[in-house]
Length: 285
Image (cartoon, rainbow, N blue to C red):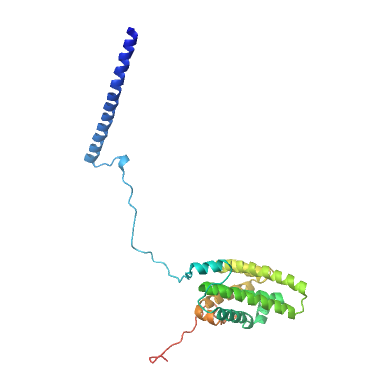
């Protein structure tokens, strides 16, 4: 009986003193923290736990970079996006028939305004349908690169340039007397060659001359060029043609499709030939 009363008294004492001890301990910690903050303020030292975050650097000055014109994508409505996702062509900047005629004229410039005999002689290529096609597709690719910069209308024009090329290739193969089954195999091979060449030329034009020379060696020379001077000539030719065709006005190309080509060999090949702009007098004539 006595033992039970003693245990009860001890438990009561502990229940009463425990909260007081915790409160006293917490008060002691708070007092210590207060004294530490006061000491830090007096000594002008920021406590580690209260170190402020570093302020972000902001500046209103813009870096001076070379400004190059960037072709922005045309903004089209939801209906146009819907019908183009279904495979149709939405409204364009110019009439579709005018763009088709310009595409046919541009392909004609790639065929009739180039001296193929000079390419055969300078590059030691055989005078065959395949060699003609390899040279033609190189110039068609340069036109595609230029017209892809003209937004949706330019991309629509690219489709008909390629369409005109395949129709011309098939017509030429028929005129040469190639049989139907053989012609089908030839068209399949040329199609694979064309799209493989596009990837190679795109990579080459965006890279240095070594990458472009490798693309020309694979696609134009079919890995059979042993004279480095021929590769150098073609690399120089592609570079100067791309520089020249970039100076042509996009509106004129979309409406007329007229493209002129620089000669294969010229004295000052490193110069960039600009389009001659008309000059006017005081009266506007």
